[in-house]
Length: 129
Image 1 (tube, rainbow, N blue to C red):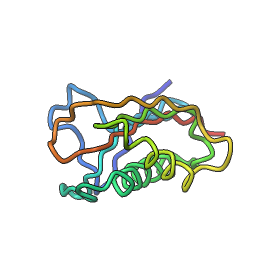
Image 2: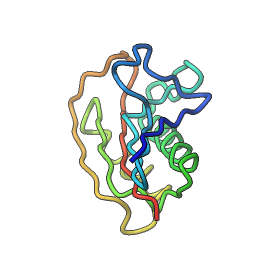
Image 3: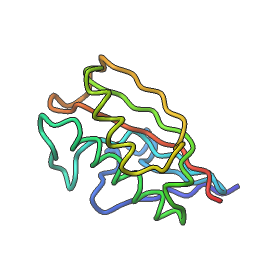
């Protein structure tokens, strides 16, 4: 199957193309790399885990939509938090964008991110119906 990179104007692609792409579609499967709360190169929601989760989910939704799907097609999430105390913010933001039961999810706390003010990073896999 052909591999297709999906890009968004407000989400930067990795500077070194050897490390992949933010979103890759192969057939009806969409793989979205870890999204962070940066929009057009600027941090959104400094100090606010809920707002950072919302930005991450907006990016995920935009990628899934660009691939021809909806958030109902998302089957798996990996949610990384700088502090596990932000778990409730992730749960609340997830409830805003997914209907029950929603996708499977792994939540990991205590993560050191590449940028100091990041509190959250979320990756996703979608299978388009």
